[in-house]
Image 1 (cartoon, rainbow, N blue to C red):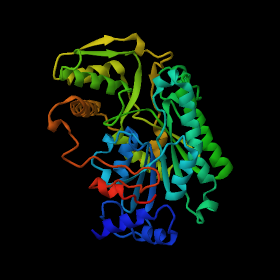
Image 2 (cartoon, helix red, strand yellow):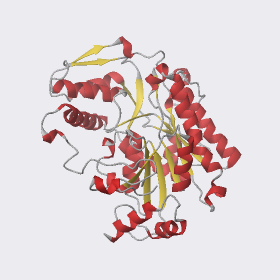
Image 3 (tube, helix red, strand yellow):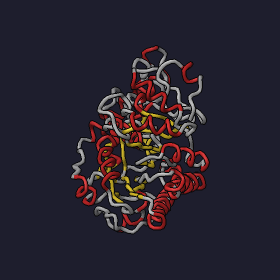
Length: 412
C-alpha cells in the first residue's frame, strides 16, 4: 500500500506544479506493480498508439521490465480492450498526435527515455479514400512528437537522451516488391510506395532521419511487415475473416466470409512474437537506421482464409467482394530480416495457425460482449472494473477502483 500511495503522490505533481517533489518521487518510485528493487530513477517509456495491436503488445513486454514506468497516449474514446490484464500497470495520458500543443505538454511532462511511436492512421486501404487525413495525421503527428525533443535539453533543464522508435511499414517498398519478383526485400531496396499510406510512412521516416541528422534526435525506424495478433482492427484481412466467422457462429450474419484479392503473398508475424524484438531494437538499434521487422516467410491470403475457416464451429463459405480490392496490390511482400536478426538473434515463430486461433477466439469474445444478452458475455468484467482514463488536466494513470477517486481530479 505504501508503494501505491507513493505512485498516487507522484502522479498528482507530475505536471510540474511542485517540481522538486516530483523529482524526489520519481527517484524513489518502484516500477508499476510495486515489485522489484527500488530504483534511483525509473526508466520512463511513452507509447503512442498503446491501445492498438502493436502498441498493446509492446506494453505487455515493457510493464514486465524492472524499474520501468510505462505511459500510454490514448485518444478520449479509445477502445482499451487490447490492454486487458495490464491496465493497472500503465499510466494513460489523453491526447492526440495531431494536437501539437498537447503533444509538447505530454512529452515535456513525462521526459521519456524511450518513445515508441505507433500512433497513426495505419490502415492501408483506408488511405485511398482518406488521403488528406492519412498524410496529415501520420506526417504532422510525427512532427508534433519530434519537435519537443529538438528543444529538450533547454526545456527540460537536464540531459535526458530520448531514443525514439518510429513505426515504418512494408508499404514503403511498394512497386519494388514486384521489381524484386518475390525475393526478400532488404532495407536498401528503393522506397516506391503505391498508396497514400505508404507515402506517409516514407515521409515519416525521412522526417525522423532529418531530425537525427540536423538536431541529434535519436531515431530508429522499424519497417513493420504485416503484424497480426489479438487486439487488431477488423480492417486487417485476418481480423475481418475472424470477425465474420464469429458473427456467423452466433447467427448474427450469414455463414459467409466476404473477401477481396486472395492471390497476394504476405510476410506475417505474430505481434506477441515480435514485441520483445522491437523493444530490443529501440535499445540497441543504430540511430538513423531502418530495420525490417518480419518473419522472413510468406503466406498467401488464401491460406490465411482457409486456416480461419477450418477453425470455425460452423460450416462457412468464402465469397468474393470486388469492393474489397485495392487499386494496386503487391503480389509478394517478403522481408529480408538479416539485419535485425544480426542485432537481436531473433528467430520468428512459425505457428501461424495458433495465432489465427487466438484472433478468432478474441473476436468470439468481443462479438459476444457487443451482442450477447447474458452478464457472462461481458468478458472483461470479472477481471477488473471498467477503466477510467484521465482527461486533459488530470492524472495520467488509470484510476484503479471507484470512479469517485477519479472525479476528485488528480493533477496532470
